[in-house]
Amino acid sequence: MHEDTHHDDQPPAAARLGAGQIAAFWRDFSAGLSALEALDGQEFVERANELLQRHAPGLALELEGRPAEAGARLVVTAHGNIEQFENVQALVREAPRCPPYAVQAFRSRMAPGPQGSDFAMHMQGFELSCAEVLVAHYDAGGIVGLELAFAKPIPQDMAEHARHMAFIMLDHVLGEWDFSVRVGPVDFVDASADARGGAQPLSAFPPVFDAFQREVLGRSYAYPQEDEDRWISLEVRARDAGDDEPPDLLSFHDGANALATRADLSHFLTWTFPVSSQQELDSARDAQDALEAQLLSQQGGILAFSRMERMQSRVAAFYVADPADAVQRAERIAARHAPGLEAELRVVFDPAWHEYLGLYSAIHRNRHAKEAA
Image (cartoon, rainbow, N blue to C red; front, side, top):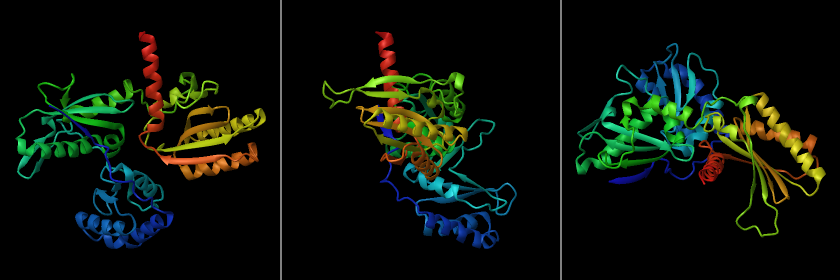
């Protein structure tokens, strides 16, 4: 039995929270905080979420610790709905200082105990523990693919229920960001027949997951140092290009893979300059290089690739931490380096780095094929 499930099948894209909505929530929350702190922990969370739903439906607040306790933490979560992740980050980015609480985006991993990340769930008369969920993993194009199996017989009428419980457990064991962003396809397989080698209990999986990210996928999540940075230059021909049309020239930042899926670099910004002369091309390149230098100097973003398209436009693609700031920087730089050129700035939320990893996987797949030939 092999059943394909993609955990990232999400509802339609959520409406983006406006600055006014975010400011109104934090204003109301701050004004009512003293009253909230007079409640117990459960009531604090319930009332805080009633307030949050007025301004940001689809998001939720959780409290780690007790109200007014030193070290308490307010966690903003989207319950794994990646379509709301941009709103989570925006809400946290604009949070005021409200001691003693730290404000955090996304649920953390459950703290491991003596038996690792083991716990059991009881739902509708059925019990399942993390030790009874077996996990195998593989490279699914720059993200982690999982195959799950159960270490005990599951009654037929509880099969769907058990799979749902396994997803909840994964979210708690890996944390909201890792499971929603860094995990791709999740398939349920027959433990005796289809599972890949190396399966282990979910309770022991987090350190294996982290080692795979670091050692196989190459994710240090640190900016690459100059002496270890890598670029790849390629000619790319569009499928609809005629034989007499020049190919696109792609300069791909292979070393940026170390940062792929980093939570603070989740916006993909493309900056396109139309060019019709060498002088315009030089101006476009100077502007894009200046933005790259500014972002790198403050670790606010990284250039993922640049592309010369049919000798008519030059595109630079970045992953940035603060899209509004990056756009403002680009506009100021363009006015200085490329006045008169009608550049286009486009920003999309891409926490899983689909735009980058699609190219990364294709480039390395082709290189491995050539080496094997």
